[in-house]
Each structure stands twice: as C-alpha cells, then as structure tokens.
Image (tube, rainbow, N blue to C red):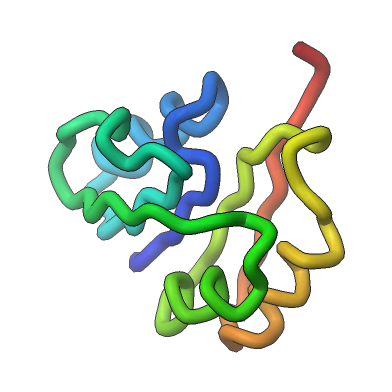
Length: 99
C-alpha cells in the first residue's frame, strides 16, 4: 500500500512510520524537517506545510491512504481534510491524543 504520513517526525508519527515500514508499505513521510525522518525501508521523505492545501494535496496525490499524526494545535483540520479531498485519496486516518 502507498501511504502518506503527515507529521512523520513526531512522537506518534515516528512510531507509525516504523510500523508502516516494518509491514512493507511504501511511505511518503511528510514533515516540516524531513532531515529528521528515520532512514527506514520504503520511505520517501518530503518537506511540506500542513497548512498549504494545494502543496499538501500535490504531495499526497496517488496514495492509497493518508495518516495524519500532526498535533491538533499545530494544524487546521479543515485544511488537512481539504487537501485529502483535493488529492482524491480514498482513506484518511487521524491519530492524536493528549501529550
């Protein structure tokens, strides 16, 4: 499966990234600082801004699923949903919780 992971360097994101890699998925790991993305199998690091709908939509286009692990205070859910919708990705999963 081709998965885009937004927030790939955060606490939840880095763990999800490792699990997706372990399971053999092809992952586009989206982060503000892609140099911090773990060098694991199947990962393509990508710098993108979660607030830029058009840029994010272009980055996640042609993926089977998008996982967002961006902290709720660091993003606008309406923009994230708009980017996923604009990109035509059929599956969108949001992961979050209390710090």
